[in-house]
Length: 410
Length: 136
Image (cartoon, rainbow over all chains, first blue to last red; front, side, top):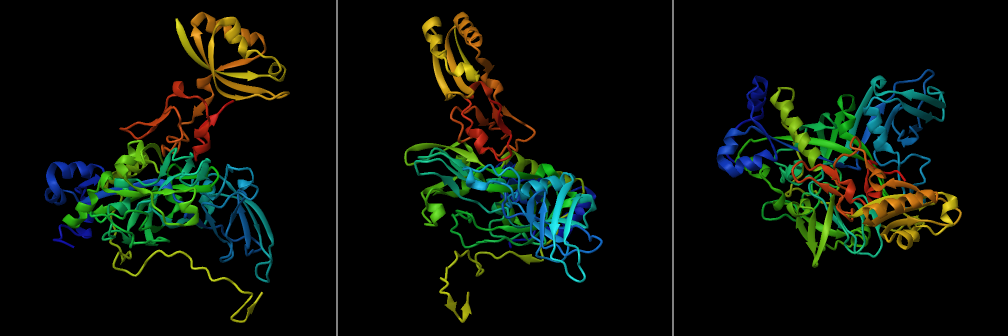
């Protein structure tokens, strides 16, 4: 860290007094252009960042309360979508990509995936009644075997989001080099580089404003789904070692966040169930992180612009599914957001999957919460693994099962 | 005055059997461009047509089709964007062949310009919130 400009405590005192200076990750760029880093760093206390996009590794933990007689749920469905019951008696976890049990999936290709875990989460948060169908095998203390009932978030003991991987720091740009249309989580991709799908809020995205994880860490209080949440841990596949450009920005998917937050304070407008054609169900999550300007370096990173952030173009008809690692080239987010990119002499229209206007709105809402004294900042209790750490993303090294390994017989 | 009009023709089962669209050219001297068609014997059919010709001839031609049992709908009513469901992600943009769907460069909201739409329905496939709907 460079010369300290302010502490969390000082910022929180200013928030309480209504004297805090907050700008969004977009506004700060203009300020830095006008006044320079040094002056802006002295004036601005907090920069708000945000993102709103499909985040498949999301889910909700709920506790329904006990029935009479008691029941240990081993199999459960919420509006026909399977929830994981391999926890204590009436604890359930529903994942965003779980598809309704009667869905034809990709048997009718490309599947529509009309309703899944993401939709259940949105409906729960919207306060709609959800049908719970549950089965147990019956034990001495949990004799009940079957339950069908309506439930509502207001009656649940706990309902909290626990998303193992959100807010990916940068992501792939997907294209299709084959001669057939393909359906991916980065959208419908037309043949012969007909279009390109990308998914990042770029200059607004939390981890792209803190590329070395100097500020965001375990315990950081955040905007999550329209309510309040916290960074719980490094996200799954957190990969600080990805190649970086001269500004320190990773040139592909790198850091991720595991986040947690009370669904009872959330808003269905910021948690949106998705039906991604041919791929499956998911959840669009709204997530915003305040970055305290503790020193000039922090601000320098917050002044990142779309043109400084590059993303790899990857062929989702071959390189991605087969994991070849081949990168066709790099483009920056200013190009991506302009509506078209150029590759091998071809003009390719682009489709974002992450909503820039909504990311911008999240930055503004979080700014207002802080200005109005309704949201204070928390100092992380643990930093996320950075480039110096041992944490690296690895593919699975398969070890074939030979029917008789270490005495295990099947 | 020459005008261009995009319409959706719904053919009831009876009308599918008769050659009527070619009469637009033969009887009324109209030029037409078939943007989309799904017509098979013994089934209801659908055709998206761009008709180019004199205003009066255009109207006469469409009236003729109606007399032959074809239902006519202006194209702009057939693909709808539900703004309540749109999250402005932009998944539809890159697949739209006519840029009827585009991103406003200031607000970054997705705009649907109905007059440019040729009802290819790629946006319906691409939209993850089912905000784009085909009402054929």
